[in-house]
Amino acid sequence: MGRKNFVLKGAAVFIFSVASVAGLSAQKADASVSGETIAIDAGHGGHDNGATGNGLYEKELVYDVAHRTQELLEEAGAEVIMTRDGDYFVELIERANLANDGGADSFVSIHANSASDASVSGTETFHHPSDSEGETLASDLQSSMVQEFGSNDRGVKSSDFSVLRNSDMPAALVELGFVSNQAEADTMLTDAFRNEAANAIYQGLYEYH
Image (cartoon, rainbow, N blue to C red; front, side):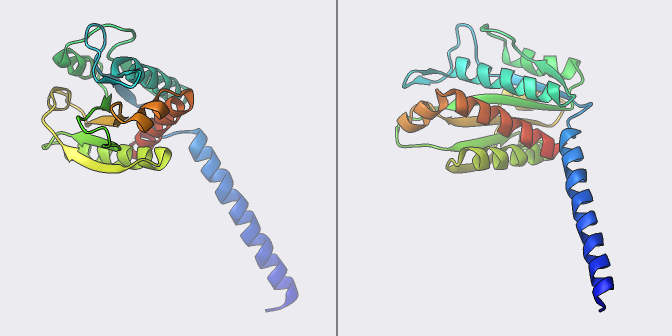
C-alpha cells in the first residue's frame, strides 16, 4: 500500500472512530428511557419501617434512592409514576394499581434486606415466576447494581411478591443490600451510595428499554 493511500485510510478510520464516539455520546444523551412511563415503588413507609438495623430504616433509605432515581429518569425524558412521594404507607395492591392505571411500561420496587446472620451481604433482584420480561428487567438491574456497588452478587430470583404478581407490566423488585450487615449498612447510610444506587437502577432501566 502506498504512503498516500495509507494516510487516507488512516484518516478515514480516525473519522469513523470519532463519528462512532459521537454517535455513542448522542445515544447516551438521548437515553432509551425517553418517552417511557416507569413506575418507581419505594417500599414500606409510614408506620411500616421495613428492615431496620445499624442506624438504618429501610423506608427512609429506599425512598431517598427512589427520589434520586426519579430525577435521573425525568432528566432523560421518562415519565415517572411514584407509588409514594413521602413518608406514608401504601397498600401493596394499590402500588401495583397505581402503575397499572398510569399505563407504566415497567415497574421497579426498591427495598433493602435483613438477615439474622449479620455476616450475610449482597444484592439481589426478584421477578414474578410467570413474567419472562420481568426476568429480563431484573437481570439488567442486577447486573447494573453489582457492577456499580462491587457487592456480592446474590443473583436474580423469582418470587410471588404482591407488587410483582399484580403489575400488568414487566416488574422487578431490587434488594440493595443488608441493613443487618454493619459494613453494608455503613455504606448505605452515605450520600455517595444513594447516588450510586439511583444511577444503577437508571442504567438497568436504560439497558432494558
